[in-house]
Figure 1 (cartoon, rainbow, N blue to C red):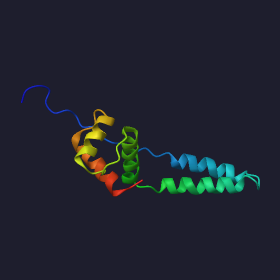
Figure 2 (figure 1 turned 120 degrees about the vertical axis):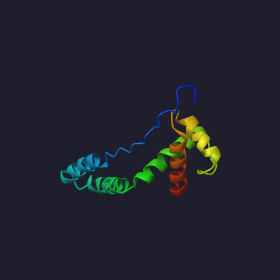
Figure 3 (figure 1 turned 180 degrees about the vertical axis):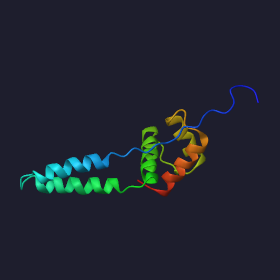
Amino acid sequence: MFGRGRQPELNVLVLRDADVIAHGIRQALAEATPEERPGLERAAALVDRAAAASDAELRARWVHERFAMAGYEGPADSVRAVKVLREAAPGLGLVQAVELTKDAAAHHP
């Protein structure tokens, strides 16, 4: 009614750069000495696993990191969790916070 009206909602964008990292590791692996190969092969496997994570898993990880920074250890999809998340990420809208906490509840760290 009065005032500014509805605040614009914050859109959550998931950025991925695992492909760039994987390319660099594969280049290093192609030039690696026999001693370096095991470590680089392990690194390549870790990057491949990280690249396979869904957007929901990445959002959930972000939420769980915010919870950890705030010292919150309760259920990820509770009203308190939404409040903690909104306090940890000022400007985050209620709808986005609810959706993010649902992702966090579905994907435990």
